[in-house]
Length: 279
Length: 314
Image (cartoon, rainbow over all chains, first blue to last red; front, side):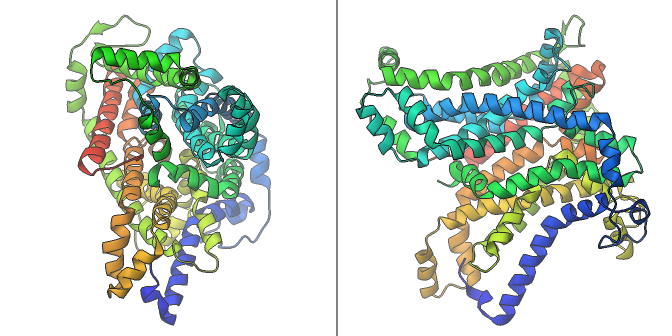
């Protein structure tokens, strides 16, 4: 957008007021819940609520970490999202290499099929998956969540990696091929080692995607043995009905690491996610 | 994307106009060593999609014409499940709530997101910080975002309820009223997704060359004219893709409603869940609603692609 009406001094001030307002609106709820998680019980119960924390008290974190199923929920999240990420990266990186670098007639249909999964409503296959997992005897296991998670994380993995592989210069691969390397060797010896930063970022995003999944976890995990944190935390709202500090602390334990990861990788996230949209 | 695709088209290949030509084309695809490798490399991903998405959705459609109670023999039901579904008052309510949620939340996200993108498209000190903070809410699991906002709207200690009472906006128990919960759900979705929408639109704006604006300015275009005549038409492809993604996402809303309303707020996906997972006597009804979500999503995507001319890749 051109400079236009923002050129005047009054316009400049208005512009900054809007920007500050916007940043406050995005971050306020996060900061508020952080505040709620670190204050004493009496400050939590105060009306009107205090704006800045007057006390510093970690009793809410003691409450949630004292709950066995909260700790096991975090462990389950790491196991489910971690396994999903490893499988998605293995399957996704070779598919992405093929789609970005090799030539074949069905390239466009395959890309469209993968994109279609990103549009696909997960809830549509809930019934059949439930029947299938039930008859296979794998309900209430990690697999029951990992299998659908792989499907829905795969488009993200493939699209990010295709965008990344396309940015790499072709020269080194060509040089390897001139030296007699097959396309597969060129991929494993040249492209993949060069892509470690891109693969790592993609892995982190896939992990975040799988860690925030709720529908399948809430359907297929019946016990705290398998339930991930996204299912356990809302349960706190019904269990610790009035312990608002514990609810705030539980939310923070999951939110803070995810937020930090996104802030660190925001540039790549945006370029990866918009690659298909604007190019 | 354009490069590789045109690269494929440029390869001399036998004509696919006749069945024999098609067969020869297919055979030539698999006799070429490099092309065969390309197929091998994408096959695991394609097999995963066929097994976990295509087969189950076909199965779901088949099941929607049967009377199903898990672990009991099924009987043929014809279109009875769909008849039951469309006369179900809970489903009507779910449909109304989901429609309101989708239209209003996506509407807010586009308008506010566009304003933010326009602001972020200017060079100013502190722009990096502003851009970085935009993505923070996006990473939150919707279920956890719902819990956080419930705390802020809590009757006794919630800051938002306090503000609503003090400013005389709303004095009732917000979390106790379904309509108020729907408003809050829209608010949370807008909070979570507007910044992301803004970044997608910003990416679309940044590929517009600066001299287009220079030319518009020389012709005497005002700021408003520059927006309507230059920015909007040029950002339209990115806008449509973002809009399609968001509309489909909002249309299948589950997590936010389920947690926000502590299981009481209906959406079409919540309706599916209640049938398939909670009260399994309603399995068939829930599954029919699931097929409805699938078909209506295709209809929405079709509308975007054919009527609005959305392009995902060019």
